[in-house]
Structure formats: C-alpha cells, structure tokens
Image (cartoon, rainbow, N blue to C red; front, side, top):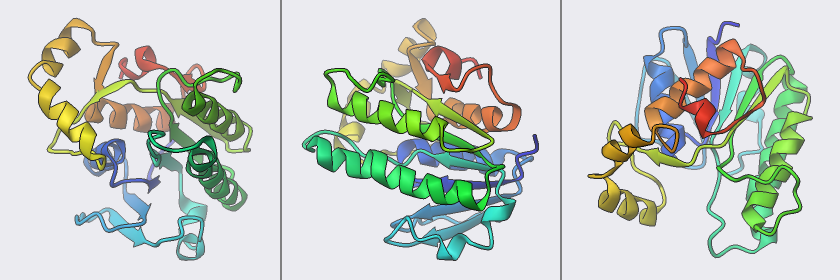
Length: 222
C-alpha cells in the first residue's frame, strides 16, 4: 500500500517527534497533517500543523480525512501520580473518541498506536497502566480500520536532538546517555531509538506485518 498522506497525533512527544522526522525524510510520504494542543515550533514543506485544545474536534480535519492513508498515534501520558480514572480518560477515552471518528470518516486508513512494553491484553492484571493500555489496544483492534497495529516499545534512545516532554525522562536519559549506545549494541532487542521506531511505524503501515501487536523484538527488526 502506498503511504502518501499521514496523520500524526502527539507529534510534540518523544516518539511523535521521531515518527514526524522519519515521515519528513521518507520520499514516499508526500503530506503530513499533525494535530496537537500546542505548537511544535517547526516548519516543513510536507507539514500542515493543526493546533487545537480539543483533540476530538475534527472540524479542521474534515477535508483531509478521506485522503489519509495512515494515522500514527503516539499520543499518551504517564500514569505516575494519576488514579485509574484519570489515566483512563487520556489513554482510553480520548484515544477511542478520536479513533472512532477517524474510522467513520475513512475506514480504509491504517492506524498505528504506540502503547508500551508489558501491556496487559487480558485487562485483568495487577498493574493499572498495563490494564488500561491493554483495554485500549483491544478496542482499537476491533474499531474497524482496514488494519491496526499496536507498538510496544521499551527503552527508546532519543536521536536527532529529540527531547521528551516529560522532564524526568530527559534527566534519566542525560544520565544514561553514555551507556545507551553500548547497551544498544549488546542488547539490540532491549533498546531501540526514535529513528527505528519511526521507520518501523511507517514500514508497518505501508507493508503490513504478520501480527497486529509488535513487541521490541519485532520493532527492532526494521
């Protein structure tokens, strides 16, 4: 499948910045529509940015949606300090509210969702964030898109000057940065990079994959 027009939710986050850069670099991607609550502070010939507080409002997207080939959805939040109800509102409720509108507008698009390592597909485990992510994945897989893929990355090494929107992530990466390239060589299926995740998302949207849920061992093949 040709992936010409892409839609990105969450392009200001670390993974979102990575897939945005790879879409800009990919000669097969001609147009990028990025939706977020705050400006990215970047411009590119391929890029159209839509900034709006209510991410479920599709008014500005109506003309674009019929031509979208793939939606990349790395939008998310940390579970630290949040109750299950609060975390569910962003991780499940917001994601499904957007996805359901997208599939109604264009069921032929491919939806690629960034979840996380150790996501609980049974939805019954003891770890709250894993249960909520599992519930979200299961709902997306049954949403009605032509194809949907769930990415479960673990440790991601930011490249190209990318920084996380979460301050303590940046502190952690700054401390660990000297060791990350060595660990990546020693354990390539345990650590990935923003470049590799971005390229894998595009490749899966374009060519499909043998299964809908991609763990680190799958992501690091690209």
